Each structure stands twice: as C-alpha cells, then as structure tokens.
Image 1 (cartoon, rainbow, N blue to C red):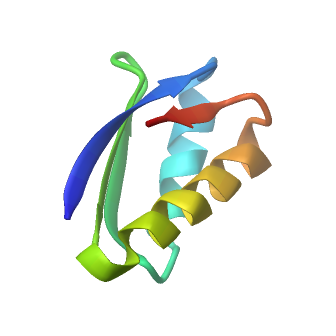
Image 2: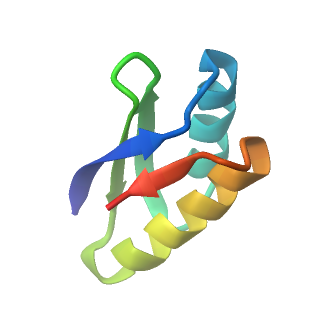
Length: 72
C-alpha cells in the first residue's frame, strides 16, 4: 500500500531529510519520501503492516522534531 500524508509543524528541510532517512531504516517500511516544500510524507509498506509502519514513522519523526505530526 502507498499513501501520502500531510505533515504539520515541519519546520526544517534538514530535519525532513533526517526523518526520511530514519523512516526508510524501519523494517516495516518499503519506501518513504518527505517533500519539505509540500509538507508531505509518501509512505509505502505491506498492506498488513501499514498501520504499524505509520505508527513507527511517527515515532521516528518525533525523535527528530517533537512537534511534527502525520495528519491522517
């Protein structure tokens, strides 16, 4: 499954790059890209692991920027 989410409170392009790298290291994630200009996260993961992948992605994001949230 592949979905695109809006990110709120994403303030820094460097932080977005760090988040993208961290999310791509997650076992449940097949691929992830963050576009800082459009404030969007595109996440691809197996259908049965997708919700877990989103939750783990949110945790990875919070390690870099505490206030940033995935908008569902």
